[in-house]
Length: 213
Image 1: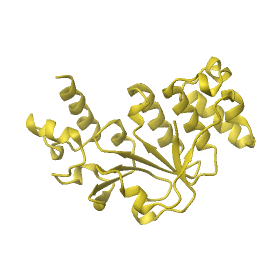
Image 2 (image 1 turned 135 degrees about the vertical axis):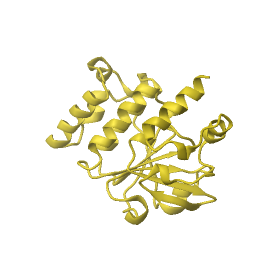
Image 3 (image 1 turned 60 degrees about the vertical axis):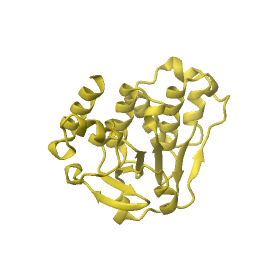
């Protein structure tokens, strides 16, 4: 289990400043060509959660930890456990809180839905939306499909063959075919097109209706 980050300044023209950016990249190579010194944050396995989150930080960051624990609905019982006793979703949320209190300038979140169920994913995304500017960090969410992230991000980057096909804040402006989402073929087969959805929430509803059919 790991969360990636970099302390190098981003190109603000591409990623914005203290923004949440969704990068739709089927090949998964774009970030590694455009970001420097991407590091992996991996914890010591036997530390108690409560100690792990609070060691080496000042009062302001301790208050942030308390707020994030509340936002993500982390129980006191979980805080008493050691990191090696957590499930993958629990550990992911704890690592997320830890990286938020670190000096990392940009946080890279890959395949979050691998570790988090829909409810936890929504909580994490809402937390990022609420705190990204106050903690002075960029968050980059990488994915190859439409998911719950689209309603929370500030900027969308669509990549094909390591080239930026779209970089902007208007999801409805993304032209088809984008080759960024597994959902597109499914939607088109049923007569729905991305351009038909002007609001992200409407698109999300259509996605989940289609998946359930």
